[in-house]
Length: 376
Image (cartoon, rainbow, N blue to C red):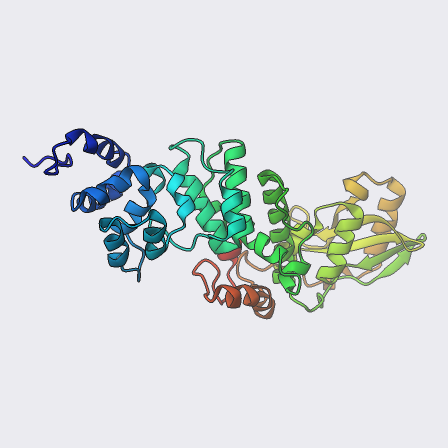
């Protein structure tokens, strides 16, 4: 039986005990590669102690990276900084434990500001290190180095575990937050800042996706068929909310959830109206079908912050509704998911990001996709 323990023709066998212990700490999926390389030379094995990231990068180089020069530097006894530069990895990775490395190292920032920042936000335990490194790598790829330094801090602040795949939306939002000339930026209520906590950032990113969804469902054109006509009853004006701007303004003024209605409106499930008096917003009204009634009904009538409204206003709304021939209203509902998102709006939002990153990710395709939007 062949032993996996390092064995070198050297009088001081104790010298190799520490590298051996370090090698055992690498993830099982990569340990065989790392161990095989370490057995080629004592100086390479020493990297398990002095620079675990460099040993890993040489054993599992990223696509297109030839480790030969870096290996030669190590064997020749040149500095770790020279070897790291030849391998294309940042020197600040030297402080990470072997457990951190489970996938090829690529694309990490290494500017002076980032090196100073990251030194204060390294993972406090080997257990957290793999997800920490994945999250830093993901935010670098999705957004920029300031966002990578920010997520590093946020993950160690509460020593929390975060699925890196779940940072996609936050990364996109952080990128668009720093690009004010884009359409995606104009749809952000709260932009990313390094001072934000992770929970606050996630909430802001989710709010952004809600407004994205509204624009992508309705497109740039107003809703052509509002089912009913604008009118005035008992001094109340019934004003149609026909566009994304109308709906967003009403949601802001009335502090309600109208921005979430994009998909509902696109599938002809409801229509939204603003009730005003002397130009002042009084309530928001939702017209839709109720129960098995095939005719339009007043389903919701709420004031600011979804406050209840008096019977007087309900009576005025019913009078306005019944001023119409309800039997002629086309309320044919579309099957959920069958109405495509607006293609020009989709491309207008994401094109600057595609160009900046020089790629169209599989998870953000060129064709509009409800699934892709939901999975961000």
